[in-house]
Image (cartoon, rainbow, N blue to C red; front, side):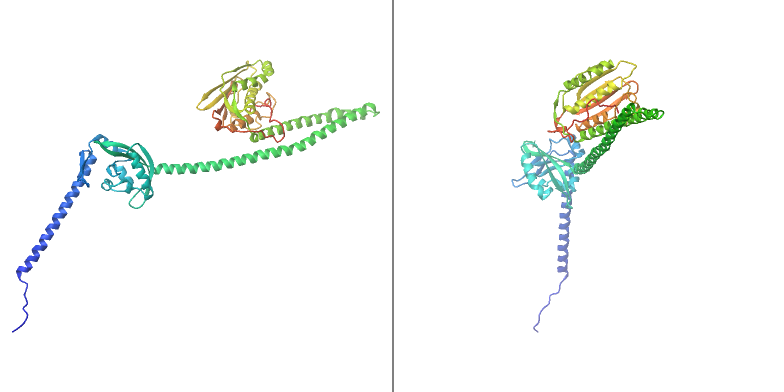
Length: 478
């Protein structure tokens, strides 16, 4: 009977398949063990390189391979490099990292084994790669630096400063790389710019308010002068009227006791009232002039030039010759450095200070005045010293404020001299202060910058009244 024969799988066929599967599993296991062994070897090699136990390693390339020596990097140096706060690496001439410390790996956010063997260009943002290639080219010949952005696996970037310098490893060219993290510096710069901008805004606001105050003082002083002129004018008219009444009384026949009563009113009551009106008006006028003078110091344009301060002070002392003789004072002027300043303004400062020495002298001893100076840290430091009455401690805080008179019984004045001196010195970008002991004397210190660029430059003088500011002799201590 014809039919198809079917061959059944016998024990021999099933056994062969099992053998093949077992052999495949064994091969896979052997390959896995080999891979694990190579990985362990690579990790041990990296550990040995970092620990200084290996002096060289072999890297295969198109030419068959070459030895990359590590022996110049001694163990002690490796410890130092690993302890650095900056990233450090050794690159070959193609920019491949042959060595890296842990800090650089931390910056990159990658394990150390992933960093070594990478090209530097692959570790920076795409926008920085052209800069890196240029730095690598320069770094093979000479030391160079540059700022780039490293890129981390999550896409985050970190600004760094690269320092490259050429080196030799057993006659083969290499590049030493130091990487500094600029994050803190950049944050500090941003904070500094913010503070600087805020300070500039506050300075502009302060300057604006200062100008408003000066304008207010100027306007008020002008407004006060008009009624003052009226008071003085009517007082003079009243004085003239009184004189005419006296003339009429002397030639008339007004009987007593009316005649005597009228003369008493004219000579005593009205004359006394007119005297106080005149004295008060004159005082008021001086105060207005002082306010205008202070206001002008804020608006006056200075002519800055290199001044012979020695000659300036000598000239100022000469203007006080008569007052010095009358006071029986001794004035000594030491060596004084030159400084860029406005001659008229600085002359007024010294005149106010020397004038104060003469005004507020002690009757218990001969007055001695000493003017000195020296250069220190880019500044001209001047001193005006006396052995006069001194300044009480309670008055030091308000010494340079307007209308401050600490010894009103000693001399006349409005208390504006030191306020004006303070304004002049500040406009020259300088400082003025005092040291004093009541009953023993005072030392005024004055510093001005020696660099003309730090001093306000001017070309013309502005004076709304066509007159000079307050004269040097109208000075009053605090």
